[in-house]
Length: 196
Image (cartoon, rainbow, N blue to C red; front, side, top):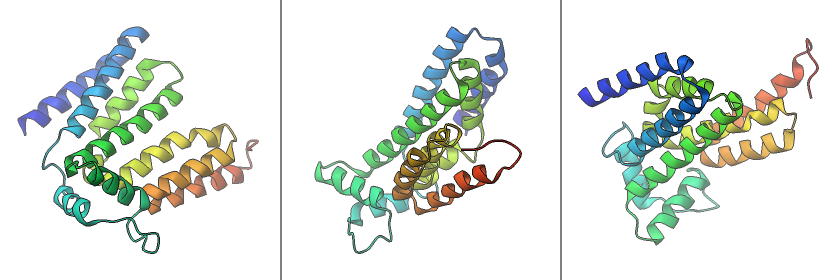
C-alpha cells in the first residue's frame, strides 16, 4: 500500500509542477512517466480483480468464428501467445503496452505539441483510479476505450471512415466500443456550428 501512496504522491507532484516546466522538460517527464507507468502495468503480478479470471481464460480460450462470446482480438492474442509458449503474464503485457500506446497517441494529438498539457492529462489519467487502475482490471475494455480515445480525433477532422474503422477495431477488443459510433452521430446533430 505504501508503494501506491508514494506513486500517487509523485503523480500529484508532477501534476502541480507541470504548468511551470519548460516544454522540453515537460516532454522528457511526460515520456518517462508513460514508460514508467507502462512498465508497472507490464510487470504487475496478481494485481486486479479480474487477474485470476484472465489467467484462467488465457489457458482455455480459443478463437472460433462461430462462437464470438469472447471478443476476437482477445482470443487471437491468447492463441498466438500460447503458440509461442508464453505464459499469461505476456497477455497482460501486450494489453498494457497496447492500451498505453493509444492513450499516448491520443494525448499527443490533443496536446498538439504542448507537452505541459500532455503531462497534465497523462498525470490525471494515472491519478484517476477509474482509469489507470481500472485498466489493470478490465484489460479488454480499457484497450477498446484507449483505441476510441485515439480515434476520436477523426471526428474533429471530419474523417468518418477512419473513425468508423478504428471503432470497429476497438469493438473487436470489446464489443461495448460500438457505442462510440454514436459520438460521430451526436457531432453531426449539433446545429449551432458547422459539422462534417
